[in-house]
Amino acid sequence: MLKADLIAPVPELLRRHATERSGKVAFRDARRAVTYAELERRTANLAGHLAGLGVGSGDRVAILLTNSVSWVEACLAIVRAGAVAVPISAEAAPGEVSYRLSDAACRIVITTAARAEMVEALRAEAPSVAGLLLVDAPAGDLRSFEALAELPSAAPARDPDDIDVASFIIYTSGTTGRAKGVLLTCRSMLWVTAACWSPVVGLNADDTVLSPLPLFHSYALNFSVLSILATGASEYILEKYSTREAMRLLETGEFTVFPGVPTMFHYLMEAAQAEGRSSLPGLRVCVSAGAIMPATLNAAFEGAFGVPLLDGYGITETSTMVTMNAASSSRVMGSCGLPLPGVALRIVDPASLRDLDAEQEGELIVRGPNVMLGYHNKPEETSKALRNGWYHTGDLARADRNGFVTITGRLKELIIRGGQNIAPAEIEEVVLLFSSVLDCAVAGVAHPQLGEVPALYVVPRDSSFDADLLLDHCRHHLSSYKVPHVVHQVDEIPRTGSGKIIRFRLKEMVQPLP
Ligand code: AMP
Image (spheres, helix red, strand yellow):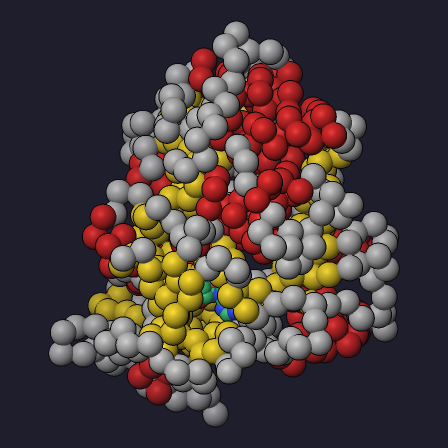
């Protein structure tokens, strides 16, 4: 069942496919494509140059780019240099970028000319940054990523073969505010390819994938970068998800696999219904992860297009997948499937850690080859989350008598907006910087398309409070998806005796508008 040959060092996988399918397109975007042979050659050059720029084994290199072929090349080159890739959302606000650059002590930032000034300005807060590489540098600029990709390097790529050291730091919303850097290895990531995407979903060298996922997130790094490389498939990378563009491409009949988050499938179905369309020729399977996939949406999508839509449960801390549905008649709609073979999964009482019976709701805990090494520089948070090798997910779940797992809720205070995680505390910290706010709290509220969105509850300091100015302040400090959808003024924030916000009470404090 486990396709163990897919778990190999990145340089070996590159050489394997450069030999077996040299002229085949590995990745393409709206601007350019790269074949397996070119990918092997260009990432070797880049990796050698990174070492020449002073990047040592284990040093961190940030990727601050939108989804693109260059993103993939940067990532694979960093791994070939023996360094650690630190993906950062290209939409991150400057404060979020500087936090990640300094927390991970990044040496080099691979970015675009348009972002160079912003990154240069952040070097005061992130003094580890020694230089930038620009994917679109003008001719003659020494910081040109493109020139280095084409220029053989003086020293060869380091090409480490140890796949059990950290190769990626993926930032994930912490429950306590600041994002935590999850340390993942090539083995943990490729184990998911070998235990899930290849055997369960059937991803293989004949597949052509359309990927709309943000590459800086673990789901895409796993599926849309490493699993494509490991299996020798071919992929078109959308710069950003757009229903119209995804639909246009899917209708060409070229694509066999489409990975997404529930919101995307919802939008695709609505668009198809509005335009009376129902055929996505050639599409073999769709995969959903990242948030709860309602049984009704799952069934409606499959009914509308006649393509299996398989839900799986994944977390950054477990290199993504823990459970997955296979396309079989015994599938339980609304469940996220069975545990991957090789993963140990328990559903326990969160207080006593006693194992619960089938059908009982408890916290899901996981142990297996996909579990993270820990959080970067956060020993306390690591020991809270990882106990005797078991990762405590903070998700509530139950398993039926056949072992099918359903996620039923969350112990952790995360808001999941269309598959993107938001920690309430991160928004609260920013709101409290605003002078006319005395106190505040954030909670998730239901949203028909996005599942959940952040709502802000504010106790104003005085009559000068202006909600529009506060939202401008939020837009300046936070990525757009974290900006509250609605602001409610309240008299006080409900708290426990020990000062913890009682979030479920917040919604009760707001009178519905007449
Ligand atoms: P992230 O680390 O950003 O991938 O977020 C992981 C969280 O997303 C999990 O802890 C769950 O709360 C949620 N999640 C992921 N996949 C699913 C799924 N298939 N069903 C329900 N919740 C999910």
